[in-house]
Length: 555
Image 1 (cartoon, rainbow, N blue to C red):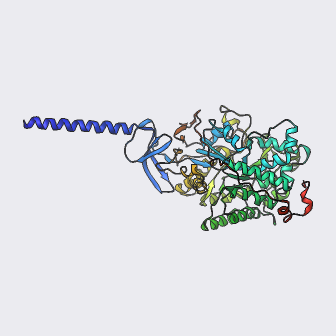
Image 2 (image 1 turned 180 degrees about the horizontal axis):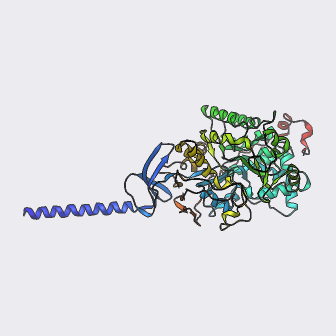
Image 3 (image 1 turned 180 degrees about the vertical axis):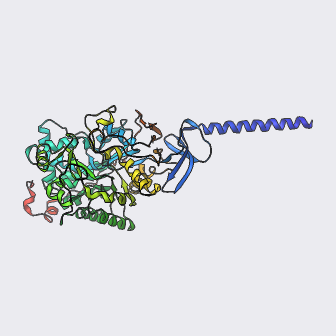
């Protein structure tokens, strides 16, 4: 009798154990993806430990020491598992550019500088076609083209300004606009009617959810007045949104048009408006003065930060005023024939321009993308990477006539498009910059500042924590490196040491191969029912300008 009772108890316990095991197994199998044995690092919580990560429904569901299983697993032994890298300065929104970014660990690629116009249409055009998360500001450059030059462009049957326009069209647009000898977007002041049209476009873009106002005033320094710039930043401030800025006078070392003078303009506006500010590619003369001011502003409770990319070469359209000899040479640069000597290099033609060739090419094809070498940057690159809140962003340059299958070696442009994160982490490794600090500058700080600007989708990114969106980059901290160079055929060599990248819970890079999947989500504010546009009156205008500016603009 006693034996029988013990037997029954044993059977009952056995059944309970089997049930518990079955339940445990069911819970364990409940994950879509698990990342095992990785060094999980999170700057916000200071987490740094060997742990397992379970992902379900696009979210990081669990970070644990316990054994977990899922439908798919990644062994991250010897690798770091971090929140995906966030690029706030990304123009390369072509299929090849996005592949290169993914190989560099990027999970969110936004253009907060040049931006786009027709914001609703722009976001609609990206839907289902992006592997990375995507976002944009409303563009000052393209808006001014629309107001000052659209008739000239549309007369050539080249572009319809009703559709989405962004960095992919800018180069050709700049050339078309210059055909009549007067690029109004760059050199023409806006009269009251034009100012109201411009600011109404900004307001509509912001109403449609644009991340902020994107300014490349450094290309329009004679056309955009300080009053126009203030009104533009004010339009974004009405919504509590940021200004992303390529400042007036960047990167001049000449007085009284020093680079920090251009910064002071937008910094003052942002401070008086109480608005967020992201100061982009702060890589040149005056950078440390600017960083000190931004740090002081943060201590005052203002939401301001900056970006850098770790290269001595800059890249943009050849027509930029800061490439002209008086500005370029004043910074200690020369029209040489190598990155060390300096000079203006044409990736498309694979040649360095002499000063005479540069000036002629500038007239013939003002939209040509060139690389300008600034040797002055070299001693500062490591110090920039050491600076907190100086986030890593590529200023990635698009390539044209490319597809997903275009070989990497066919990329024509700047190696920063390909290797910004790889180079930043390589330099950090070689100069004893803490790994946690670099992760913060690559992932956490961009998300922190954008989230503090009220962008809900960034409050759940940039952090390796339970409950966050599963945007994750897995890399080998001892091997992550850039491979791209300035040489033709080598500009698109992808970063190595990042075998896995996950976007919204979907593996987009597997064993260092980019997959044909498109889980990217829009990064934007909710669309608002009503705009907040406040037109200026002629009376307002005349308090700032003489009466002669009421009529035709002065270009």
